[in-house]
Length: 270
Ligand SMILES: C[S@@+](CC[C@H](N)C(=O)[O-])C[C@H]1O[C@@H](n2cnc3c(N)ncnc32)[C@H](O)[C@@H]1O
Image (tube, rainbow, N blue to C red; front, side, top):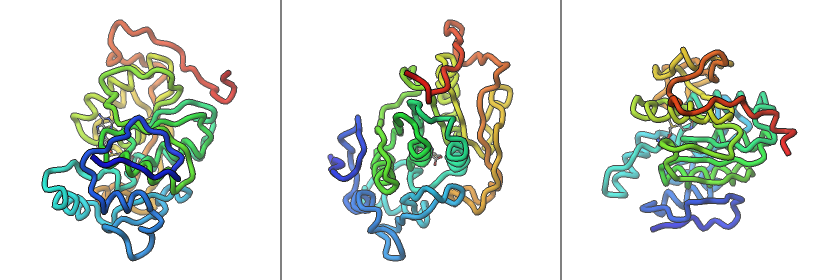
C-alpha cells in the first residue's frame, strides 16, 4: 500500500492509504514541477488549462498511452486515467466559478467526481470557505493532491463513494463532466436531486454528452472551447454549465424528501 507523504502539500485527506499506486506515477504527481517541460515523467506535464489558464494541472500528453503504460506497470486492468485530463465539462464549470465567484465565496463546497481536482481548485481560488474534492479513483486522489499543491490551494480529499447517500454540511455541490457515462449518470442525477432537495446549490458542467435531463437542468452559460480539452473530446467545441430549473421539482429525489429553499449567500453565513 502506498501512502501520500508529501508534507509540503496543504491538503487534508480522509484517504490516507492509496492502494497499488506505482512509484513513477506517484513521483510525478508528488513533484509536478519536475514534470514540466519536455523531460516529463511518464509523459505527465504541468500545463495551464485551455479554458481556465489561471489553473495549472498535471496532464497527460496522451491519456490513452498513459493508461496503457499504467496497466502494463500494474499488471492488471485499471480504470482510465480520467484524472490526467481537464474534461470539457469541468473546464466550463471552473471557468464559470472563477468568473462568478459569488457562486461559491464563503461556502462549503463539494466537487464530486473531481478527477484532476480542476473544479475544486477553481472553487478554492474563488474564495470558498472549504472545498472537498471527491473521487473514487485513488490515482485521482493523488493527482488532486499534486494539483492542489501546484496551485497553492487547500482542499479536503475524499475517496468515498457518496452517490447512494446524502451529503450534509455542503452549501454547493459541483459536478464537472460527471454525466459522462449512462451508468454513472443513473446514480449521479438522483444524488444531485437529493442535494438540491436538502437546500444546497448544484451546478453541473457538461458538453452535451447526451445524459443531461433538460427538463430538470437548464443552461446558465455556454463556452466555446479554445482547443479541445481531453483528447477524447476533440469533436466537442461547446461546453455548458447547467443548474436545476427553479420551476421543476425533480422526482428523482424521492417522494419522502422535503424540498427546501436553496441556502445561499454564503459570504454572509454565520
Ligand atoms: C470524466 S471525469 C471528470 C473529472 C473532472 N470533474 C473534470 O471535469 O475534469 C469523471 C470522474 O468521475 C469519477 N467517478 C466515477 N464514479 C464516481 C463515483 N461514484 N464517485 C466519485 N467519483 C466518481 C471518475 O473516477 C472520474 O475521475
